[in-house]
Each structure stands twice: as structure tokens, then as C-alpha cells.
Amino acid sequence: MEPDSFPEELSERQVCVVGSELVENYTVYVIEVSEGDHRWTVKHRYSDFHDLHEKLTSEKKVDRGLLPPKKMLGKNSKSLVERREKELELYLQTLLLQFPQATPTPLACFLHFHLYEINGITAALAEELFHKGEQLLQAGEVFSLRPLQLYSVSQQLRLAKPTCCNGDAKTDLGHILDFTCRLRYLKMSGTRGPVGTSNIQESSLPFDLSVFKSLLQIEISECSAQQIRGLSSLRSSLATLSIHHSTEAMMSILVPESSEFSQWEAEGAESGCPVTAVIPLWKSLTTLDMSHNGIGTIDGSVKLIRKVEFLDLSHNQLSTVENLQHLYNLVHVDLSYNSLRVLEAAHTRLGNIKTLSLAGNQLDQLTGLTKLYSLVNLDLSHNQLAQLEEIRNIGSLPCLEKLHLSNNPMCIIPDYRTKVLTQFGDRAAELCLDGTATTEKELDTVEVLKAIQKAKEVKDRRSSGDKKISEETKPSAAAPPPHLSSPPSSSSSCFSSAVAPPPAVTSSSSSSCPAQQAACPSQGNHK
Image (cartoon, rainbow, N blue to C red; front, top):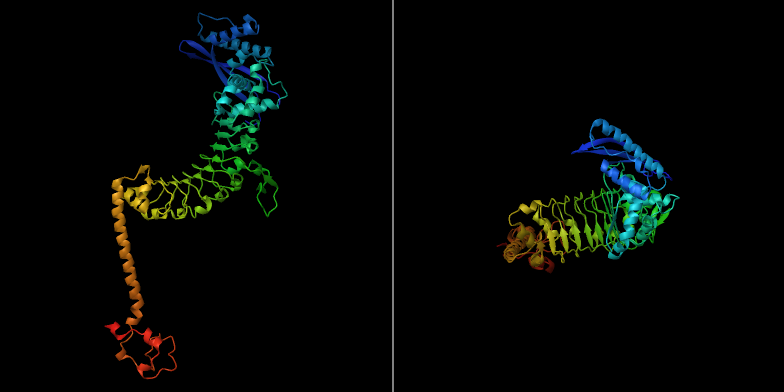
């Protein structure tokens, strides 16, 4: 089905009774309704037809003899049911012909126009907002719409028809437009597969968000980026944008114009290259949640969201972290459940963030996190961290208060908690590890481990110092004793053989230069 399957004028409606089902002791008739490429089924028993007919004869003066009479004997026999299917089909077709422009509300509800047909959908929405719209706006609640509903509104606005087709003021399209102009919080939830009993695929229906003039927050899920129209019109007002299960690229959401202009630049940016378009910034956007998508890279579209403080890109397909240096105001970043194996020099991209979630990746080292000095909360659970030595890379972070390391290979190490806490030295008492505060018993153990570690470090320093002295004295110790030395005129100088002896040297040892005496070790040093 094409996205714009409805023509400028609504297609002719068709209705057929395509069969029947026996439910308990009564017959249910299966009705197929079609309009253009859209089809859906409705099921009703004869008593439903009777109730509909009573309303139509009372409200619309429909001929009372139009509905086939009720049968008491043999009502479920095959021959009677087949004959009644044809009679009921003729009844419905006659009603549609009798009301070609404005379908009576009882008949529209009977045929589920309010669920699947453009006029019926918009009329039902308009009536709902007529009764509850003002209350919803004053309460500041999130209002939920489906793509099919907003698509129907968009199509109605395209048609050169009155905003109220059935003469009922409660169903006037104006109630919807007034509401959308003032609404601040919107949720758009699509569906996978056909809608209800119809063949309508919501993911192929484009909808236009430009009818919303005051939105501060919008959440869109289960919609394709291609069907979202008019999102860019919200750049000046939107503060929170959430997109789930809808895109594989940030660019398609943040810069939909990129499909038309390949050489674009963000408003206010200096570019040495020629550009074909200057794209306005998202001036008020502080929260961007694009979790649960198929995003593989953080592209250049983030240049337009400079005021974002909360960024959620969890549950995507990221293998690298790029371009976040453009977001100077970042405070909270969620990159959990991606495909990150390494995060190098994170401070050059993540600035002064306070919360960072890297859970559910494939990290096995933490060298890139050493300079995140403002970090308060760090989640590294469900990674591949196996070596306790990696904790030293974050052990000196001065503001870290909460650390999550659960479900890493290192967690099976005996006394894992105290060995991790030891890496934080005097700040061990301030750290909450894996959601559990440090206990006094753990602190006592940490002090013991710190003492052992300190003693080991002192021992290592002494050992290293002795080794250094040994290496420094090794050349002198190898020199022959003075009584075995040749006369000074030939080789008694303390300088290496690569350095030529001074020209004024004589055979008398008392005539050697002070520099030589100072450089030469005394004989007693060889004892």
C-alpha cells in the first residue's frame, strides 16, 4: 500500500457480507468494508442489525421494512443463514447509497468507520476533544495519538470539503486544530503489522507534525523516519525528543533536510567549504532519547543540538563514540547495550559529564576513562572486565560516588568487593559499589589490604633502588686494583677508554689532576 493511497476525494465505499460463524447458539455475520485500498472486517449478530435499524428509523426516518424480518424457527439452518447473508448485504448497501455524503453516526459506528475510515476517525477524535480537550490541556497531561489518526487529519485538511461533514458541530475538525495548536506533550505510537482487522499498515502512512505549534515534549515509537513529516517545524520550541524503534540514523531525524541538501552546515557555524543549506539549530532541546533504534554511528547531525544535557543512545549498534565534543552541555550520557569494545580519551568527547552508562558493551579495559574528573555515577556492568588492575584507571576520579561492575568476569574473584574498593584508597568509604554502600567490615579489610599493598610498594622501591645502585657501581667494580694498574702515563685515568687521557700526565701518581682523583674510587671501596 502506498503512503498516499487516498486520492483527493474519498474513494467509493463497498460493503459485503462474506460469511457467517456460529457462536454458541447464535449466528455472527462477517462483513467486509472497503474504501480505496483499505479493507477491514466487522462481525455482528442479527440483534445488532435490529438495534441499528431502530436508531436509523427513529433518527433518519429510514424505511422500517428495509431490514429483513427476524426468524424464530430454523434460524441457524444453513439455507436461512445463506439467504439472510444476501439480504443483510443488500440492506447495508442500500443504507450507504441513501447517505452518500454524510454517513449517520449509528451506521458509521456499526461499520467501524471510527477505527479505519478517514472521516470516521477524525469525527471521533474531534468529538473526544470537544468533550475532554480543555481538561486535558489544563492538566498538562501527555496526549496519545496513533499515526493513523494524524494521517487522517492530514488527509482531511487536504480535501476541499467542509470541516464538519455530518452536520454535527461536535465532530468539527476545528476542535482538533485548536487542541493541536495548544498541546504541549504528545506521544505517537505506531504498530507493527496491520491495524486491527484491517489491511492498513501504519508504518506506511505519513503524518504531519506541523499542526502542533506549542509542543515541548514528543515521544515517537514504532514509526519509520520516512513517515514523520514536519518535525523540523518544532526546532524552536521542543525541549524533549524521544524516538524509539523508528530509525537507523540520527541524521534522518535531526536533519531531515539532508536528503535534499548534501552540503549543509549548522546555523552559526564557520565553514571553509561551500554549502547548499544552512540548517537552524534545535534551540530549546535539552533531552534527546534515541534509545532502542538501529543507529550505527553518532553522525554530524549532533552539531544542531548544542544545548542537549541528557543524551540516551542505549540499545543501538554503536561501535565508536564520535562527534560528542560538539555537545558542550552534556551532563548525563547513556551508551549502554551497544557494541563498544574500547573507549579512548573519553574526556575529549564527553567533557564534564556526571553520569555515564556503558553497561552491556564489550569493554575489557578502562584506560580511556582516567580523566573524566567530574564523573559521579559510572555503570560498567555486563562488560568483559576481567583484570582488577583496570580499576586503577578510575580509582583516582575525585567525584565518583556510584560504580556498577556487576556481571563482569572480575566479579568471580574472591573478595572482589574489597579488592575493588582498595583501588580507591582513602575514598573507599565514599563509594557505593553495585548499589550497596561500603560496610565497616569492608573498610577494615580495605585498610589491611592497603597496608599490605603499601608495604609491597616500599619493598619494590627498595629493591628497585638497590638494583639501580648495583647497576651504577658495576663499571667501577670491574676496574683492576691500583697495585695492578699500569703506570698512569698509559692507563691509570678513571675515564673510559673511549676518552683520550690528559696530555700532561706523568709517571708520578701524586701529579694526577683533582678531577681524576675525585672520579676514581678509593682503594678502600674495593675491599
